[in-house]
Image (cartoon, helix red, strand yellow):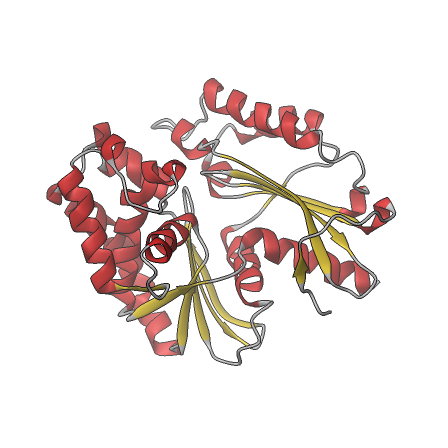
Length: 317
């Protein structure tokens, strides 16, 4: 299937409409697309809300009532965009924060009353595999690639080539959970960064040898942290390649800015600033443990992977 993304708004029967909802630990996303006659698809609608579900987890891993309420309000908004989507063309998934939450059934029961289809809770490995498909599906390279995705409550690492996944792991480290734990009170200091980076290294290091032994030829990233860094490079009119030197520069600038609510970079969207430091700490640890030289931004991630899988399954019937 030749999936070229087009920006247009043609009128087609409703069974040509497909939708994916991703209930992430940081943001909730809705992606609505339309499959065209030439097997390309056009993006009809994208909606994103910073729900930050992971920030609602308490010390016993229960979601607060406030976090559940924020999430349900977002789903009510999403539901308004699903009227023309056949149920078989709709995928709704939840990820790390809801894997962790002990009281997730409270949320699921209420959410399933709002949405036209029940939510599927992805395992960490399923999430990682979908991310790899989304990050590589439109990329014609035959190189072995390492794909990294830093979410709100988990980080996925996947190695594969030619659409074949060699290794997929999900780790319980994320930019929202790290922001709460290691940047308490919104303070940006050398000590906070050092503590956060070392904590991430302790979790990454046990699996690092598996990945470095498998090896790769290129590294791509697909999360908000990488997108934020790419925005800064784009504004500077520099090549959008993330290096260790660039990560160190951003870290030093964040420390100089002292507080999360004072974070500012030319070209960076304001909604990305609250978890930039925590995501950066995890990315620095990934570079260190896996001995990564450079990373490029991918064109897709979890939502695109779910969409491509949905379209492929429909076409194979």
